Length: 379
Image 1 (cartoon, rainbow, N blue to C red):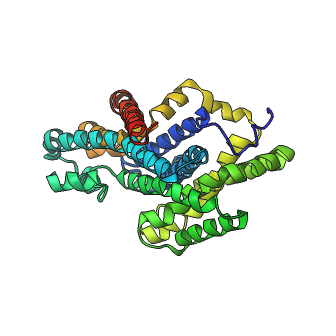
Image 2 (cartoon, rainbow, N blue to C red; image 1 turned 90 degrees about the horizontal axis):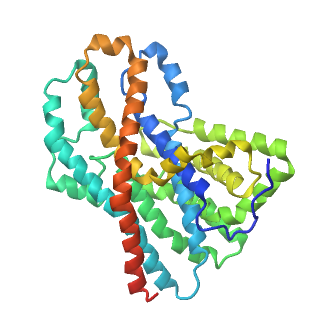
Image 3 (cartoon, one colour; image 1 turned 30 degrees about the vertical axis):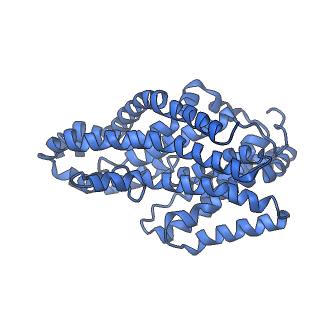
């Protein structure tokens, strides 16, 4: 164990390990979506739940939002001068960071739905018929494409709803910063409590119940040093606390289909995620954190957004092309092998496709956002 990192709230703008955390979270979402696609006998469902325990897809999405609040907050805290100038720059860059790759992905999904999917749906085995309603939105229309582009709908890709939350939540961060910078610590606590109570109240809609996750991440540079210092002074108790936080984080991965009931699990996902991030950034650096420095994990982190966009359509394509032709007897004989094979193949293909999407769309759009804002804000 090494010494704690700097306790200053002015953390670096870029921390490679946080990017690695994002990559692992994206892999967890992919695993959560994949395992169980091939039906598992009811008598073995408990084993499936155990295998999927570390692939807590819903909790991983909450981690994304806390992480966005933390990372974006690092930059927002450095703003000085004209607030509206910084706000305009931030909003333009954020939209250009998210939308170009999203638009390209929607184009690829629409092309697959139109030209590649339908022939394979003419002979769908009985065991797979539930997947048809789960994966396919029906005939592609321009209205459907437009509704997915403006994130009113997620019929083309189940993860699109999270991007709407990401955009609105991250664009709300500067306003939260404007309020927080003018109130004492107790005022920040009250604001966090109010936002968290919205989630606990189970208000309808994905956005209101998740705003507290962004603000929780934003506050980590202020709360994190105290958490990290406490863990450093009590290493054994601190390690137990972090392990407990991790267990709560994974266990709170609710499969509730009702969004109101599901929202009530969000605090049990968000606050443990914040504790673990505080330990990582401000606490003692345990040997297990070295996993985040491993090159394959770093690559996953760098490609995480492109991979996140692509894993769902790739999963659907691999399922339709490779598994639908199988007979019921084959599926019932080796369901575990097929599930893990589907996970390995779909994740590998999604990562391979994420490379060109990242290089040809993500990075150029980020660079373009910097050039555009440099002209608009006069830098």
